Length: 482
Image (cartoon, rainbow, N blue to C red):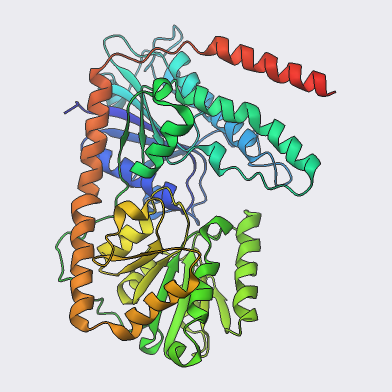
């Protein structure tokens, strides 16, 4: 096992989402093992982030947010994100230099006790989502004498496959294609500067290998995200002692960010398919990450509301727990915007089933959270859920395009399962979450990867000639088009 290290985490935006939850858990896991962990981010809204990122549990520092905006008129997101991360990295390296943790000649010699202790630790940069900073860290983040410095990149999914390319109009599509060419190339080039790359699932690892190749990145291992485990295990059928929500209505729950790719519309259509009689005494709750700054969140919430209303379902939207608890009994579909963690846990404890609708989700932490709470999961039979859900034991995997199949599973959970069958599935889900996706399991895997990285030679990076060639190609192409 490696000695204690200085772990510097670089994450673009500490909002509320699966990637943010993962990086918070990774930081907590490493901190619990004696590493000194500091998180650097370009944005943190204390009213819209996880508790550990604002209550002092983790050392969070906001840098790189004073020059470049997050976007320009709703566009150029990847360009601005990259520039903001580079600005953050420059600020970070200056801080390390001023604290005497690199070998710059101008480094200060006076250090407090914590900084002096830092001198005895190796430096590990843990970067995720955006690799723009990796070549800069590799080139200018000089290791101290006799100490190691390594860069571990946690890849959720290639950004070039996440970028939307469905612009309206042939001219806009052409512009977007040209705009993305350098960024798609840059992503692979920047990743190659990492000393080690890990992925969040076997599905994501396969995609990463296909897009970038193993020669450029080396061996890509899997480190699964985790869910926090209860200190003392409770019986699988033991639900919360809190007062039943909404007079004991049977709750069908969907948790995701309000993004079109999450396809929460599937949950609404499948719920509508139950019919008026079987919907009596039930409620579909759609909860998840919502940010007023993100235009898609606002638009998609409205689209979902319009869909449900158009199907004859009564809807309501709540931004607080108090307002959610006081909605009328007649409401069929309740939208909860940015649900607090404590209330999310209550929903997981009191619901009948979790509906996880995304197609080809890279991993998907919510199904694991549901299993840990003893809640069966119905998910798309693609991507990460194929690795987390065991068909018929902890939940069901169905074609996301077969709405009637989703409706049939909902019907079975609501009216076709005995209490013994429900308890058996709850116990299987909790056991699987504990064995494969626990906080301890994730921490152990991260320790293994860091140990392997620190004990190996630093991966060489001689890619700047390729960068110069790419810049020349871009300028040449632009000149030719003009």
